Length: 427
Image (cartoon, rainbow, N blue to C red; front, side):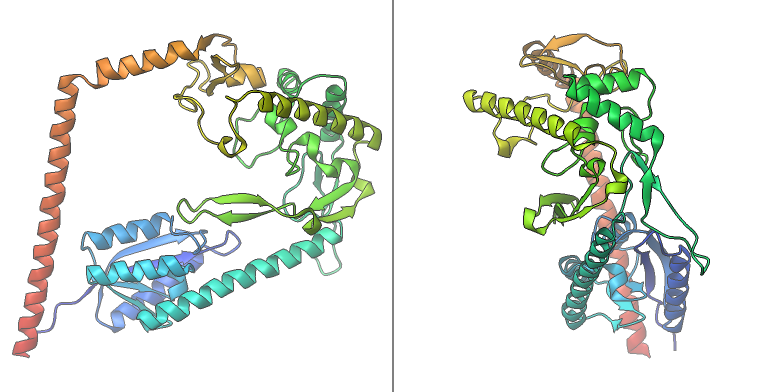
């Protein structure tokens, strides 16, 4: 009597928070290996995602696991629990449907063999868990704000103030004014009140070597006009931060996740939902200066809206984030690598030179000149017959290689199934 061929198992492990230990992955893999050993499966692949939420399917390990399943590299998917694979109802249902089509079984330590019942009930429970977690987090943050504490993140001009407690821990969420950064905030408000534009102020700050707000490793590391002017409705930007006048405003907006891209998008909350607390000890700007700056911002905004209303060719509000011209967002400066943007109605220029003063390239080019050059270059160079033949040949070779790999995988799986059936009959 011969033994049946062992199923090939792939393990998937995940933990969702930076606050959790990376040892969680090791623990999950160990549990899954033990489970596979008990059932006589051979572990051939291990996939993992660290500090990534299960609410998104755009996880490197998760995507790699699905690709491996599509190429027939394993027969059963093993995880500690269903919520390790996903906490999103749509994604977990899609995964189950895809694995079932590929002939791959899903098995977890917590639930056993996964069926449609687990998908329905487990997906619902995971969705409720995420909803409850969000509500509890929001409630906790609101309590911190009502105490005048930070709900996350420290604005430019302040620093954390952690004081020891009797139990050996430290206070959290308390802020104090940073004298050096507060002086820069006052300079920005004063210069804007005197008539300087946000762009001119940014150029002056960069010229004087003043460090910009910390951005968590993102951004260019220099001041820009958007850092100063921001968005007045959302309270972003130095000139719109109510905290500088001793007022903490929270819950202006909430975030929703795009189901296609997985990216969060901000949506404004009604003003009645905003939480406002007076924090006079954090005041940097007096009321008179704040009021004058707001009045000037309002006048400029009114002029812009009037100009757009009079110009029928101006982009509409709903098209504000869409490219207006053929090469919008595609041109870069050859000196510094910054984007080449429309600096007037007709000409492109370096954004770093224009908005930050950190690039010496002041050359501009007319939009009507650069577009024909690019299109003619594409036609004369990329559409050359030899390049087209090379592209066609490469594409055909890749398609043939992929087809051969698919046929080989299918034959291997069919052969393994026939051997298992033969072994079962002889047993």
